[in-house]
Amino acid sequence: ILTTYSLLSILTKMKSVCIFEDDLYQNFLPLAYSRPVYELRCGMYSFLERIMLQYPGTEINLFCREYLKNLIAETHPHSINEIGSNDKGCLFINGRLLLSTPIAIEGKEEIGICDDAIVYARLSNKNSQYITSQKFLDKDFIHELKKKFNVKIVDASLIQYPWNLIHANKEQITSDFKTYVKDESAQENKYKGVHFVMDSQIYIGKNTMIKPGCVLDAENGPIYIGNNVKLSPNSVIEGPAFIADDVVIKALSRIHAGSNIGKVCKVGGEISNTIIQGYTNKQHDGFLGDSYIGAWVNLGAGTVNSNLTNLYGPIKVQLLDKIIDTGQTFLGMIVGDHTKTAINTKITTGTIIGFACNILLTTTPPKFTPSFSWYSDNVTRAYDITRELQVAKRMMARRNKKMTRNGEKVFKTIFALTETERKIHDN
Image (cartoon, rainbow, N blue to C red; front, top):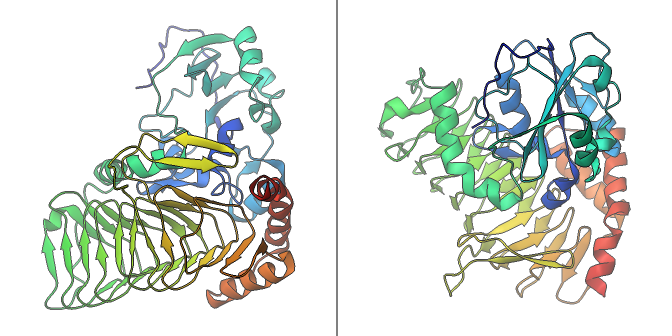
């Protein structure tokens, strides 16, 4: 728990907060290729959204990798990769921080450290002006700060890997619901034959349709359903669960505890303790469990993943040329944006599939698939960037979205950045 600082300290009054990425964004690839780490989700919010909720009325600044700057500026009204000049200083907060209580925005200059990582830096205006987004991306920057400012060791929830998000997801949905939706209850916009269990723990947004035969069971955790959601007949949702705006849940779906469905998704079949970033299709039968799926992904009919080994032991994953023991007994797959799987794709525990891959195998895909890979029974090659861009634009157009010039530029930049992935895999 992060401590509150004494008002007897020499105070530096400030009204500015900056959320930054550090060098461990690399642990969140392929999910973080197309977004800053603080746009990843756990519970009802992204890291960024949850931090902003702690600081209403405060000027927000964002630090990210330079190639993402213009794309992020399209969707955020905040200053990107620069700190405005003022006399109030700035509180820098690590974008990997799963923040539950605010860090004091006023107090003496100091840095908060947890496990030799920067949790926050509270700096005066003069010292803030020397800080750039690139400095936080340098793993040695912490040593520079330690020499200049008072160091405070803090107990903080700094997420290290995507599977930590999956593991924390159920509890975070419950915590967010209790904190931000505690005075709300289910609206009566449902058909006859719909059953609510513990309706005081169910929130349903505006213009949401719940068709006959649906059961929403919040006995073991809350259920939040956003606006303009369609729950097709005979579907079951078990809490804790979060369904964002404009989601379509197909008939006979089983949405189990920990399901976290981002906006404008279409989902069906069986889903358990899985985070889906948004604009993704998983419409058909097939089990999806203990996974994190990026945006603009399409999982073909019958795609299934394993989330538990036959040995019931900890699951190992491959990140480029490294093998990491996750310590998790349950872990499905991590899938980057714009990836597609064919029908009846069978995926093993702890599989990582990169950005913009096309999986067309009748056999089991490898545990690690480099970004921009085309895998079929007869062909293994790099996906043609021009062709994949066309496919991505077509999919976006189906949701009335258009890839901007900045989006296309980021897409091409990711292709260049991931060349190393493909070379390592080929060797």
